[in-house]
Image (cartoon, rainbow, N blue to C red; front, side, top):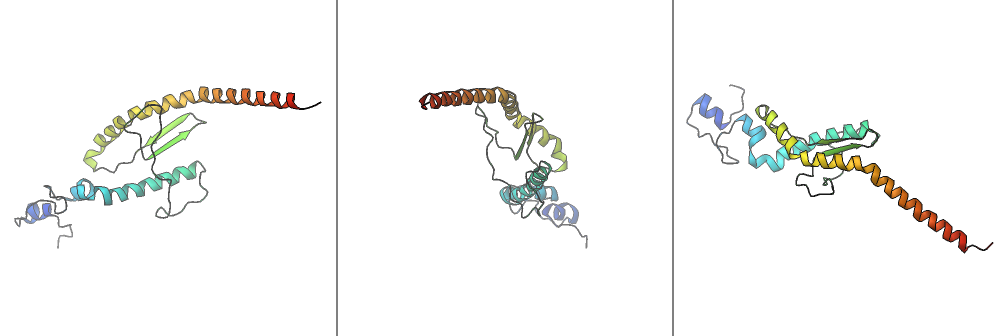
Length: 176
């Protein structure tokens, strides 16, 4: 026995038994290990998504522990991060839902994390695609974070003025 996974690709090219090299699940040519672990469209919304989410949970929990947002580490199958949500910006951005966004306001640094688990030969391509995909979001987040101080100053000034006016009104309405 070969102790290999008997894919249609293996049967056609190694055993040479006349098997047609078509994926039984997705009906596309090339049922190889590579296809099964990273390319089969039938597995994309179930198995690959589950694998992706497991990796995201581990990264999310480690970041939460690092930034002291959670106290104890739990097994990743029990860890439940907040549900997916879009990153809200002042302009419409198509790619606004990365897996994790870390905003460190003290360091004035934002990290956008979008997890991918490509096959080895697609690593560079997927990395470039992700960078391009989130480029607009990165620029908007940077713009928003840099403008955050001015926005907060404005809110503080408004709150101070309104509360000062309230104090004056209350004081004037009191009887000596």
